[in-house]
Length: 127
Image (tube, rainbow, N blue to C red):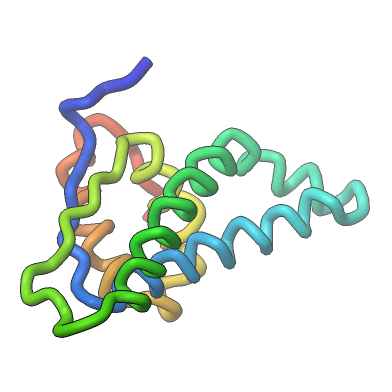
């Protein structure tokens, strides 16, 4: 079930898409390795399995945007790019990427966190 009114749009400045992509991809790699490791840690990491699809989807879109920014010829854009996060992607980022990767991409993750505060009445994020 999709709730389009809970989707959020963030403004990404030049370079923010690459930083956010790196944080999301790092989370996916780290948790995929935990799932493939011996039994003890795989059970602990099993909670991320439903979120891996959402993280992969947002990582692909961020990577495309980053590639477009880096290969652009001419002057850089003045306006930030509007990037829409579906509610499931936003929740996956807030639950699995943000707690461990805030030092990797502080600016774009801060924007995601600020937007997620609008969802506070609907979803409980860990503190």
